[in-house]
Image 1: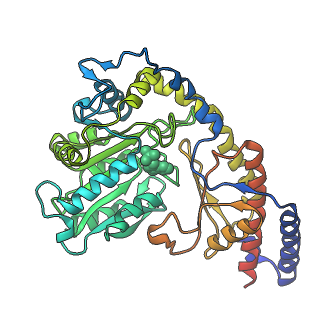
Image 2 (image 1 turned 90 degrees about the vertical axis):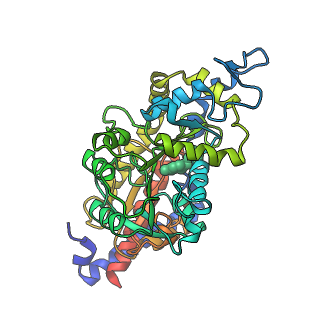
Image 3 (image 1 turned 180 degrees about the horizontal axis):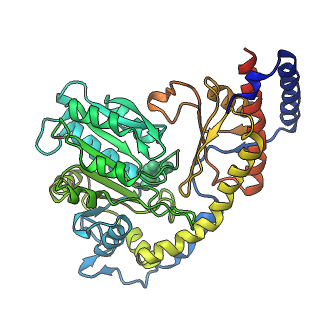
Length: 425
Ligand code: PLP
């Protein structure tokens, strides 16, 4: 659809800008203070896991089969916690390590191991000259920061509706031995909400990397975060690898950060048997054994995959109306103007919004002036550099429905005003 502002006469456009400007001035005078930046659960959601806190007392049996909870040991994590994590990811418990409370922390440690000590007996990346990493964008800024922090060159790869641009991924991975990894959020991706299609997962599994130390970093952070009826189905990447007889290609990560408590969940990693042997060795340098009280509490609380699903249904009941509100407000306010598009996820934490070229920074700045905080424009791209300056990440979970509605009404006015001004320029 054509941009209606570009089709207006100068007089009509000036009148529209004046009208929108007036609305913006009225909002400014109200001194609102709202936040649509935080990709974290609301207090109502974290309260769902509070009963977990009552499950560990001084009377609790601190054993897990043969494993002791209140002492060193079981460096791979409690057997029951590994079984739970394996069910969540749909893999064998034998290849799972449960450690710590943050999957990002595990990703950082695995990537850093490749950088300092090398993957699968290859030279450490720090001795291989400039190494590169593929970053489907828009994507998760903290992924990009992990690799950028090590001096690894982040290369953006366009995201489509079914996953990353696999022609580009395949060309780069199979032709350039300096490409060592790719960040993937395969289900309800941050921020697009896209779930990779079976075809995309199969193409990942079929990659023939030029570098023997290339791996796919499969961050399945939102694997159990559907809103309900329309939950997307993601093909299991390890099944896809088995189908083509491939191995040693994927590290998969997950956590219960957005199941129970962000920063106090349990985190896990899995890979092939030989890659996990290396990960265990690397982790053994910095960990005697993981924290296990939280692992025990999680198992007592969530029990198994059915328990996780039942708990996530409660999250969905809180979160789904917020996403429905985003869809409704954006549709009502913007759908007929030809100036914006946005994603319509069936799960996860974000909606990805694209305005006209050159608009994102201006919209975020105007929103800030009007009292609404958004994720900084560009944050969803490596080095904060959105080449067309269009993308804004909307995080609807944290504010109350009322606050969210207010923030979205202001957003619609900001998008219209910036778009109209751009059309006038
Ligand atoms: N991975 C993705 C894609 C995320 O969006 C987030 C948090 O927003 C994380 C990982 C962080 O997970 P954790 O708290 O387990 O480190």
